[in-house]
Structures are given as C-alpha cells and as structure tokens.
Image 1 (cartoon, rainbow, N blue to C red):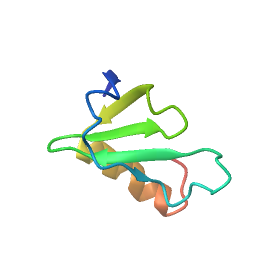
Image 2: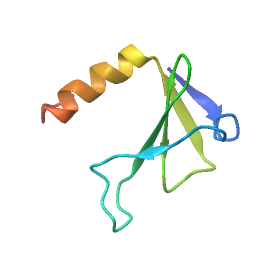
Image 3: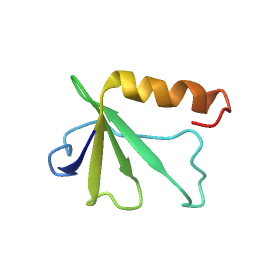
Length: 71
C-alpha cells in the first residue's frame, strides 16, 4: 500500500463514489482504477492523500464488505 501519493498524481483518473455513500455529505469514499493499482480517497478531502492498493487487495476488501461481513 502506498499512502504518500498526492491527489495531483491521480487527478486524471475517473473517480467513482461508493454506492454506500449518502447524499448528505457523510462518510464518502471514492475509487479510481489505474492500470496496475486501485486509488482510494476521501471525497471530502480531494486535495488530500490518495491511498493505492493492488487490485487483489481491493478485491479482498470489497468482497467481504459487500457481503456485509466485517473486514
């Protein structure tokens, strides 16, 4: 995982907000798939840090989370 990447590095990516994010501006996570990594950021802090993980690590998180299991 690399959490030192700035959002300027990932600014040209297509970001998608989590389907679980509410419209009231609560906890919002956005992701963007790169060529070899998945970028993750807080939609309320776009200029803030971007965390990058491997596609395998992201799938390992999303699978159990979408099934309602603790990760």
